[in-house]
Length: 169
Image (tube, rainbow, N blue to C red; front, side):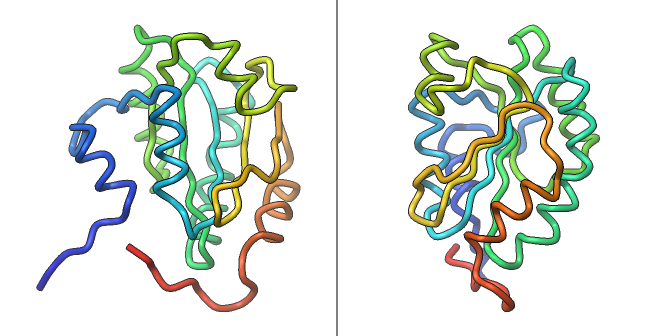
């Protein structure tokens, strides 16, 4: 029997991070590739940090949301904005969160330019959530703590109603 890996897993293997005990680094180009690897799915990307209380409070709710909506075509990516010296702590918090989605550690050359490229209104505040439609077009941004119901409503509008989406992986 042949095992078929999801696109994000293949990307992680290509980046040399499969089975790693730490979060793989993602830079500006890597971020674009991550979103593109999920074409055909609605993608929710959350930027968080270990020191961000609202981020940590939001994580269990995102775990539930991801489990609830994955069958309808939602993919979640979690990207830690922690400093490189906090990488081990970020990996530990991510693992303890129970999130099935892949986790990454942001590693960009210019934080301000990167934030501005994702949303001109984003100045790096956390948590930050960006929602992309099935074609990879950014549809919504949530900067700062946002009620899960608000996030779910935005995602729900982009997902097919009712039946689960067949896996394209």
